[in-house]
Each structure stands twice: as structure tokens, then as C-alpha cells.
Length: 202
Image 1 (cartoon, helix red, strand yellow):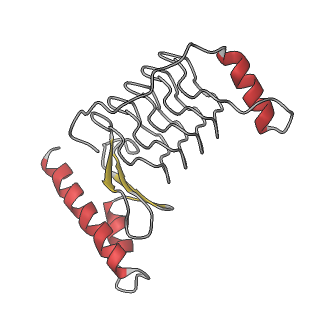
Image 2 (cartoon, one colour):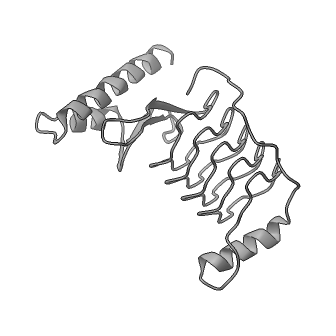
């Protein structure tokens, strides 16, 4: 959700783990060299330096990552459900297919972040450059407006495998031969409303 600043319930963080050891073991696990899957659920990672870290598939549910530096981190398929990412730096992070359900992303830097197919339902996006327009576009996908992918802040619209500007969105979803016309109409209506609002408030 966007435009409000709710305070979603977060689990209390546990003690700060030995990050270097956890990341090394997780890297070995990802490469099939033994190691151990990173389980940082509920961990206290406030202000942690995780630049370029490979946490793909890691469990970070309920973790306190507020003010953490996650720029260019690999968070594909990571479980960040109900995580506290308030004011975190996620510049250029790869969040494809990440579970961000209920996460607090208020004030987070999401410029250049890849959010394709990330679950942002019930996430707090107050002050972030991302808006969730539709929780379900009729095909099971979310519709996201991302203002942090272009130099002028013009929104780019993400739905499923699509990443389109307003021109491309109109061309694709206004196609009279679209295979799911009802879903396409729903998506385009949400995009047009958002783009009109964005243009009026520039």
C-alpha cells in the first residue's frame, strides 16, 4: 500500500549473527559445496553492510534490516515476509520473485531495483519510489509502478514478465486482439489513473 504510514506487526529480532560465516556457508550451499542455507529469520541486521551479498533464496522473514545497505544484493526468491526494511538501501538489488508480503519498505531506496514478480501485497511502501497498483491483475500477477528505473522518474509498469513505459503499456494492453481483454482493460485503467495522477503532481 502507499500514501499512508502504517506500522505493520513485525516479529522481534534475534541477536546479530556472524554475517561473514552465514554468507560463506550460504554461498557454498548455493554452489552445491555443502554449506548451509541462510536462515536469518528474525535476525537483528540493523544497519548491516550487505552490499553485493548473495542472499538468493535466503530466509529473512521478520528480520530487522532497517537502514541496512543491500545495494546490488542478490535477493532473488528470498523470503522477506514481514521484514523491517525501513530506510534500507536496495539500490540496484535483484528482488525477482522475492516474498515481500507485509514488509516495511517505508523510506527504502528502491531505485534501479528489479522487482519483477516480487510479492508486495500488504507491504508498506510509504516514501518509496514504488507503488502497488493491483494485487491481482486477473491472471494472478501484481501490477507495480516503479519510479526508480528512469532518469526523470517517469513510472515504468511491471506486470508478469512485462516492463513497460506508458507508451508501451498502452500499445500492449489496448490491443483489441489481446488474449485476455478483461484483464488487459483492468490493467490499463489502473495504469492510466496512476499516470494521470503522477503527471498532475510532477
